[in-house]
Length: 466
Ligand code: C2O
Ligand code: CU
Image (cartoon, rainbow, N blue to C red; front, side, top):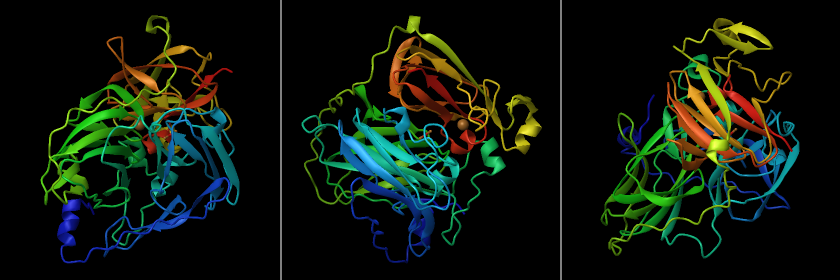
């Protein structure tokens, strides 16, 4: 079953529209509780049944958090799932003990138990949070939500409306249930786990009404396990103003926007479609998929506006000179058709066939189990404040979305500092260079955000000395 908006429109032409599913909210206590628990989500439109999910407060995606730069975030995770969990605050610069990596920065939160997260938010931007225990399955079942950190009042861009669009990818049956094969060997050894239903904010037919001439801020989040979204706008003129939460020094006209798993983009978009028409956010697959429709309800001004101003920069630590940076190398290999003959596992060399028998298909620098419970070792040890130049060489045939926890890095091209990101897409056979300041002490995960890759060898961490 492959459901695109178009096909559903045809299937459902005769059926009445279903009212939106109410968000399940809990009474606030101090601190506010986020309950990770089973729930249900109307991912497929009626007449398809709702989908049993695991979600924050039972919703998938979770309703999320909206706060302001400089604020302190305090949340108590209550685990009402039948297995351990944790929350990782993706892209947030925070103390290592709050990073939420079960088994590395904290003990897994057992069923019935709680964990209190509390930290300041130094950067404005579009972030998200998700489970970091058995991530492929838990994020895939629905444990993910947007985390929006607004600029302080007075420093926000002048827009008429703001829209969060969290892109999801689900493997569903016609009865609405999820296929729970999160460890499927074929997915893990190829491009990762793709679903058959893509959603925006948990809906196949997400819509947001606008007026002609409106200036929107779109906050795009790719929460999919493996799907790389290739986005375009129709009936809107857009500028990318931030990537992975971090403002670009100059807004960049949006033609196509590639969003790898875990990546985010802030886009300022002016509605140019006329009243009665629809502006569209489109994913350019073989058959384009509408991720969100913006029906233009009344005629607004329609006057063309000047390009938006850049967002105020975030206070990220400055980098030392690249020429003096410490060089690090990460060689990624493995996967289907990857010609890797084996890697270190359990302290000895295992052949590819033996690795596959243990559900490992990938290696970082010749080792597949950097985060194995009994043999955990950092990929590299860094001095606090050190500037690091990391070369990521992808010797496999598959693209990988490489994410570093706790600090953003600059993509480096021709020796020049490029975009600040927390996740970079490294195409098969290519090499990407990034540079960052090892500003905060602790063990910071460095892994592929195609989550079935992370589970099968593409997971390590860097240790920054105190
Ligand atoms: Cu968003 Cu370690 O992940
Ligand atoms: Cu990968």
